[in-house]
Image (cartoon, rainbow, N blue to C red; front, side, top):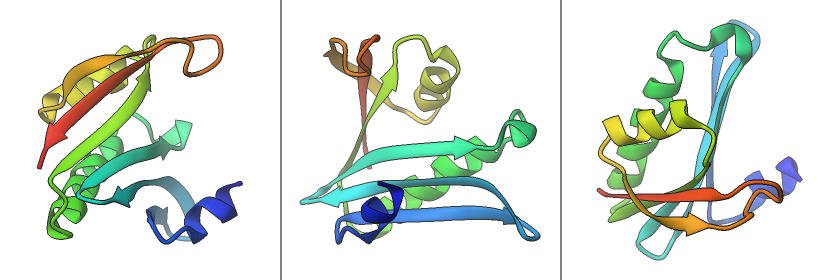
Length: 113
Protein backbone atom coordinates (compact mmCIF):
# COMPACT_ATOMS: atom_id res chain seq x y z
CA UNK A 1 0.00 0.00 0.00
CA UNK A 2 2.83 2.40 0.87
CA UNK A 3 4.59 1.76 -2.43
CA UNK A 4 1.38 2.49 -4.32
CA UNK A 5 0.87 5.67 -2.29
CA UNK A 6 4.28 7.17 -3.02
CA UNK A 7 3.85 6.37 -6.70
CA UNK A 8 0.74 8.55 -7.08
CA UNK A 9 1.22 11.75 -9.08
CA UNK A 10 -0.49 13.74 -6.30
CA UNK A 11 1.78 12.38 -3.54
CA UNK A 12 4.72 14.27 -2.03
CA UNK A 13 6.52 12.09 0.54
CA UNK A 14 9.80 12.67 2.35
CA UNK A 15 12.00 10.77 4.79
CA UNK A 16 14.40 11.81 7.54
CA UNK A 17 17.49 9.69 7.99
CA UNK A 18 20.05 9.43 10.75
CA UNK A 19 22.97 7.79 8.99
CA UNK A 20 21.49 4.66 7.43
CA UNK A 21 18.49 4.64 9.79
CA UNK A 22 15.03 5.91 8.83
CA UNK A 23 13.83 8.04 11.76
CA UNK A 24 10.76 9.74 10.29
CA UNK A 25 8.65 10.08 7.20
CA UNK A 26 5.64 12.04 6.10
CA UNK A 27 3.83 13.47 3.19
CA UNK A 28 0.81 15.04 1.65
CA UNK A 29 -1.35 14.89 -1.44
CA UNK A 30 -1.39 17.98 -3.65
CA UNK A 31 -4.95 18.19 -4.96
CA UNK A 32 -5.97 21.31 -6.88
CA UNK A 33 -4.88 24.16 -4.59
CA UNK A 34 -4.85 22.14 -1.35
CA UNK A 35 -2.37 19.96 0.49
CA UNK A 36 -3.95 17.04 2.33
CA UNK A 37 -1.54 15.89 5.03
CA UNK A 38 -1.52 12.11 4.81
CA UNK A 39 0.93 11.12 7.52
CA UNK A 40 3.82 12.12 9.74
CA UNK A 41 5.49 9.28 11.60
CA UNK A 42 8.49 9.46 13.92
CA UNK A 43 10.31 6.35 15.17
CA UNK A 44 9.49 5.80 18.88
CA UNK A 45 13.15 6.20 19.90
CA UNK A 46 13.24 9.63 18.23
CA UNK A 47 10.05 11.10 19.67
CA UNK A 48 10.05 14.18 21.93
CA UNK A 49 13.15 15.54 20.17
CA UNK A 50 11.35 18.03 17.91
CA UNK A 51 11.53 15.92 14.77
CA UNK A 52 7.75 15.89 14.25
CA UNK A 53 7.71 19.66 14.59
CA UNK A 54 10.55 20.03 12.06
CA UNK A 55 8.86 17.65 9.66
CA UNK A 56 5.52 19.47 9.86
CA UNK A 57 7.27 22.80 9.31
CA UNK A 58 9.03 21.37 6.24
CA UNK A 59 5.78 19.99 4.78
CA UNK A 60 4.01 23.33 5.27
CA UNK A 61 6.87 25.20 3.56
CA UNK A 62 6.99 22.68 0.72
CA UNK A 63 3.21 23.01 0.16
CA UNK A 64 3.33 26.79 0.21
CA UNK A 65 6.28 26.72 -2.19
CA UNK A 66 4.13 24.75 -4.61
CA UNK A 67 1.55 27.56 -4.42
CA UNK A 68 -0.97 25.46 -2.50
CA UNK A 69 -3.30 27.66 -0.47
CA UNK A 70 -4.50 25.40 2.33
CA UNK A 71 -3.45 22.30 4.25
CA UNK A 72 -6.03 19.83 5.56
CA UNK A 73 -5.68 16.81 7.83
CA UNK A 74 -7.48 14.25 9.95
CA UNK A 75 -6.17 13.24 13.37
CA UNK A 76 -7.47 10.72 15.91
CA UNK A 77 -9.68 12.35 18.49
CA UNK A 78 -7.58 10.69 21.22
CA UNK A 79 -4.26 12.01 19.84
CA UNK A 80 -4.07 15.17 21.91
CA UNK A 81 -0.30 15.52 21.40
CA UNK A 82 -0.69 15.73 17.61
CA UNK A 83 -3.67 18.08 17.89
CA UNK A 84 -1.63 20.35 20.15
CA UNK A 85 1.25 20.36 17.66
CA UNK A 86 -1.08 21.25 14.80
CA UNK A 87 -2.67 24.07 16.82
CA UNK A 88 0.79 25.52 17.55
CA UNK A 89 1.27 25.69 13.78
CA UNK A 90 -2.01 27.57 13.29
CA UNK A 91 -4.32 24.71 12.37
CA UNK A 92 -7.97 25.11 13.38
CA UNK A 93 -10.61 22.46 13.96
CA UNK A 94 -13.11 22.39 11.12
CA UNK A 95 -15.19 19.33 11.99
CA UNK A 96 -15.41 15.69 13.04
CA UNK A 97 -15.51 12.56 10.87
CA UNK A 98 -17.40 9.95 12.90
CA UNK A 99 -15.73 6.52 13.05
CA UNK A 100 -13.13 7.59 10.46
CA UNK A 101 -10.57 5.23 12.01
CA UNK A 102 -13.14 2.46 12.40
CA UNK A 103 -13.21 2.53 16.17
CA UNK A 104 -12.59 6.25 16.63
CA UNK A 105 -13.62 9.64 15.29
CA UNK A 106 -11.22 11.90 13.41
CA UNK A 107 -10.86 15.59 14.12
CA UNK A 108 -10.64 17.58 10.87
CA UNK A 109 -8.19 20.47 10.94
CA UNK A 110 -7.08 23.04 8.37
CA UNK A 111 -4.61 25.88 7.93
CA UNK A 112 -4.41 28.55 5.25
CA UNK A 113 -0.92 28.72 3.76
